[in-house]
Amino acid sequence: MPRSFSSTRTTREAGAEALADAGIDGSQVDAVWLGHFNSGLVPDGFCSSMAIGIDEALRFKPAIRCENACASGAAAVYSALDAVRSGRVRTALVIGAEKMSSRDTVGVAQALSGAAYQPEEAQMSFPDIFARFAQAYGERFGSPVEAMARIAVKNHGNALSNPLAQLHKPLDLDFCLEPSERNPMISPPLKVTDCSLISDGAAAIVITRADMVGDFRRAVRFLAAEQVNDVLPLSRKELADFAGPRLAFRKAYAAAGVRLEDIDFAEVHDCFTIAELLTVEAMGLAEQGQGAHVIREGQTERGGRLPVNLSGGLKAKGHPVGATGVSMHALVTRQLTGRAGDIQLPDARLGLCFNMGGGAVVSCVSILETLKL
Image 1 (cartoon, rainbow, N blue to C red):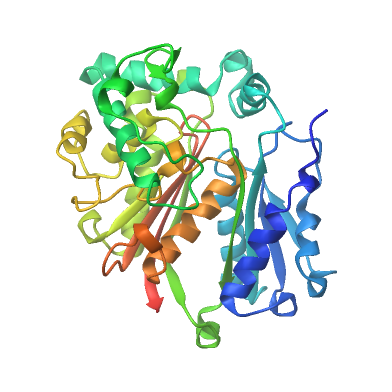
Image 2 (cartoon, rainbow, N blue to C red; image 1 turned 90 degrees about the vertical axis):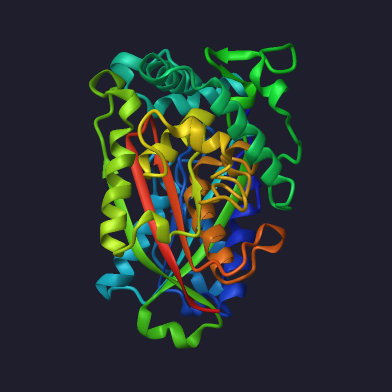
């Protein structure tokens, strides 16, 4: 039997750590949002109030669960942000959490496939779905396999400096390029090294009104929080275009009044290595079909033009589905307030995160700026 979601303490631990970091307690929180996908990963279908156990003062406060596939974390962040901006809420606690290890690999794949279009894609796993993206890219622009391998090597290398990453295991390029007994093909051309992990985890942040920033030791502000939803069926999209993410980036730059060149670093949704390659192009770092050149030149590495996934990304940091979007915002906040430890960039002032759900169905792009160190 699957273990209950309530058997893990990560939700409460992450929420308590966020409150302590902000220097507040539950009495100063008006409402709680929880990003949690589930889809059969655990038997608990009503978990929003589990967060109330973080602090006795949270009892009787509103608590809401947000679900939007792998963008459930961003859904919770954006929902809380909207409530704060409306004036209805002064301070919100946002948590993202997922427990995936209760199911075996087949069970996890089956649960995640609930985010696909069931009339046409019910028998497809998400490696199958993103293999379609890789195949479409290859047919149009040439094989993405080398670029995908380089992305895996980069992100695993970055994770070595992140104590919170799930997998501290360096990979070399030759190993990632060739299928083998230790790196089998999962869904051509995706191998094990192209796929994100089965993860348990949680992350949390505190969102408050701009006029209350003086009450806090450190703060960042949202310059943009843009969401785009594309159609669900793969059959209705030109997969190599990555149109939903492309539009979300464009809207975010416009809302923030910035250009890509202004961004210091990015955390992006590399659920599969092909997703990071397509994202490099969608964000404007490379023209369509030219992402491999940018990656080969090291432009997305630490010290490059735009460091991408210094945390190790979903590929090595981990991808506890409902937590991912919140984790990205927490990681960007740590960078912008100079508390990212060994993955810290010097003088980072503008950060970007991209959280995606389904086969490029939900695209959420945030741009954050240092406000108070």
